Image (cartoon, rainbow, N blue to C red; front, side, top):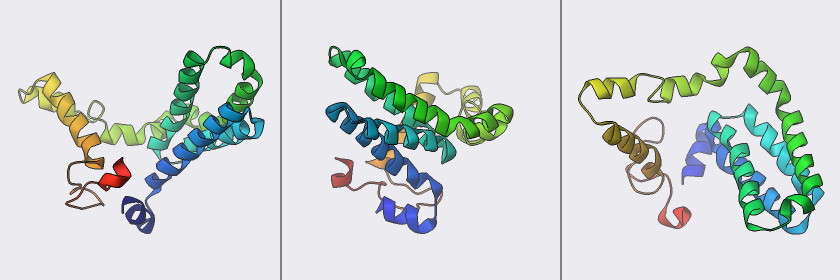
Length: 173
């Protein structure tokens, strides 16, 4: 249901799930089979993530984390896949370079969404502290509001306006 809702609304952040899944799937396929094409495609998708919705910019970090996890768990992985990892990294950098250059020259565009929504950037955290709330309570509440809406709590705000979570129980699993 969440995918249908977001896609019919034309909301840009639905690309998060597609691009992250595609990039990680290609990375794991490349790691499993040693496929240079998979690493190249994963790098291209990872670089394109920088162009889309701000949340999608986390996808390359997830990809690097996945590579790090496999490198930690599989002896000799880095040596065996060095060429493919270089191809992944170069494809990601070359693809992201134009927008990364723009963001370096105009950081206000890169951080615009975080500046409006982040509790540290928009002074919501400072306001809650001044109201007498504990730091742990504020951070716990923010974590709960940001993450549980996908699987447990209702999604009444913004554009989804549902008494249900974003994902059905089966989709959450």
